[in-house]
Every structure is written in C-alpha cells, then in structure tokens.
Image (cartoon, rainbow, N blue to C red):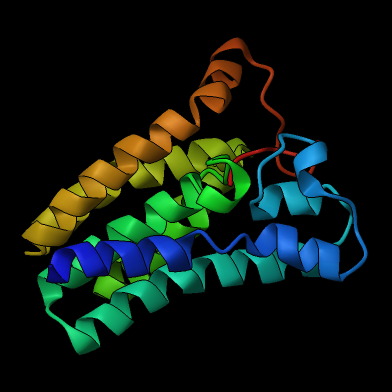
Length: 198
C-alpha cells in the first residue's frame, strides 16, 4: 500500500506540465503545436523565451526532487525510489495530456538530486563535457544517462543504480528520434538550430 501511494504521489507530481502551464501563463503559444510537440524546456525554448525555458527546466527537475524527498520524509527510502520512478513516468506520460509529455532529462536529474545529489553532479559534468565536444545536447544526455547507473553502482548506491538503469532505458526510448537523427547526421547542434534533446 505504501509503495502504491508513493507511485501515485510521484506520478501526480511528475505529470504537472510546467512547460505548457508557464508558456500559457506568459501568453505564449501552445507548445504542443510547435517544434517537437513535447512539453519540456527545449521545446519551450522554441518560443524564443530563454527565461521561460530555464524556469521550465528548473520546475521539471524540482518536481522529481520533491517527489523523492517528500516520500523519503513520510515513508521509507525504498518508497522514495518508487516515487522517483512515478515522477519520471508522470512526466513522460501525463494523464492530463493524453499521455504525451516530455523526454525526461530534467526530471531524471531532479530524481537523482533527491536520491543521491553527487550523482546529479556527475551527470551534469558528463553532459557538459560531451555537449562541449560534440555540440549535441541529446547526445550529451544519452551518454550521461548511460554512465550514471555504472557510477551509482561504483559509489555503493545499488538500489539507485537499479532504478536509474530503468530510467535510462526509458530515456533512450524517448530519444529514439534523436538517435536516428544523430546516426544520419541531421540532429541540430547547440547554437546552430534547436535541438529537441530534453
């Protein structure tokens, strides 16, 4: 029962579509009708409002962090893992938007902050390094998410490593279009054209 409640709380928090809500509140267009149609920060950036995109990124991350910390406070560490999983699913498949959400990078980082914040620093360091070398934000996210489960395992965070192995697999599935574009050389680079990486 505790795990079911943790999953539900995590899902409801994760399913809050901050990108859509913030863009509407600012008088912008429905971001589902532009670009990739996703509700994440990268698609918000396509409206030309960098501050709004940054706010979306922060809010999407924090909803993952909140799901983990709230559940850890009121329940158990294992329940917090379940809540983190729920938050990630909620962002990817929000019931309010006919299960079409974002690609999960920001929430992934937020859940990582809540469960083991040094892991989030490792993710961001890898992301920055790969992005600087390749100029592809999607590739940076894919590489970082592939390495995080190994890093967590090596740091003695076995339960978190198992969760993030699952989250990373889902994140890769959500980035399948980006992977196809990376392979055929048509993916947009940072600073050149909008890259639907988040």
